[in-house]
Image 1: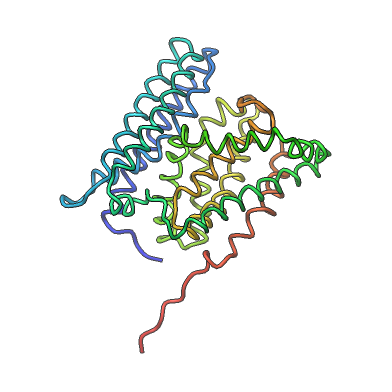
Image 2: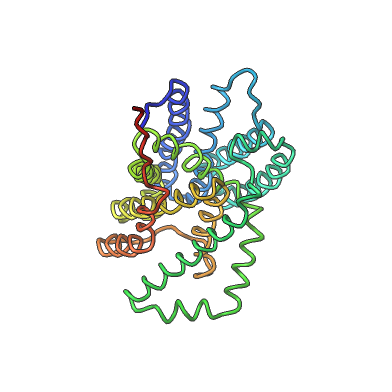
Length: 335
């Protein structure tokens, strides 16, 4: 375990101010909009963009004079984030549904333009900033993403066994249309990856290595999961579960800690931030495949839901905490 450098400390402060500052500020506005009776769906989508924005500002403000940055791609993300924020604020005073629709188009435009800008960046710059899909890890990355899909399905089956819905789960996956929708998700990923990259570039690429450097491989990734979960609090209170928000916060702690273990495992195995980006995208969008609806709001939770999620996610994801990638390397002793 090592101390952070002065540059890393500066970057952490900038990241925290931008990411959590925006989350708190927009969370207050989200509460105002909620109590005005508005649909607040625009807020969670915009919030997904803040972590990467925090990293971008941190890296740009602490860059050495001779350091080359992926400016085209970074600026595209910042512009997209700014537009999403403005639309989200606008949803308080005008039609929330219209603002949310436009925000979706903004994310699509930002994703497409961002991909073009990314390809325009030099390979060594993409490599240095964790933006390149590394060719020599392509096979490993594919199998890691497939493993997540298998684990996601296993989690559904375990949940079905506990609540008696396992036959319905099996029936859904037996439908050819289900696999058609999964294939469609693979295509639409390129039209909406920006939001999911927005989170993963902050959590996995930036914060995970810093936490693991300071607190150790296991403690660092677990602490990251806690921070990631707490970051969701405004969404827990005003969107996911306004009536049972305390349980929603606990559920997100369980979800984020256990997913942080596996996402962190995949990131360390592949060195490719796009792997957890795809996993995050899959995790969030499989609800559309299974329910036919993208509405994730106004859920009602209880202690049983928290406990069952802890057991199921613990069985599926926590064993990876004891894999080799989380084993601390013993430093050789010089005689």
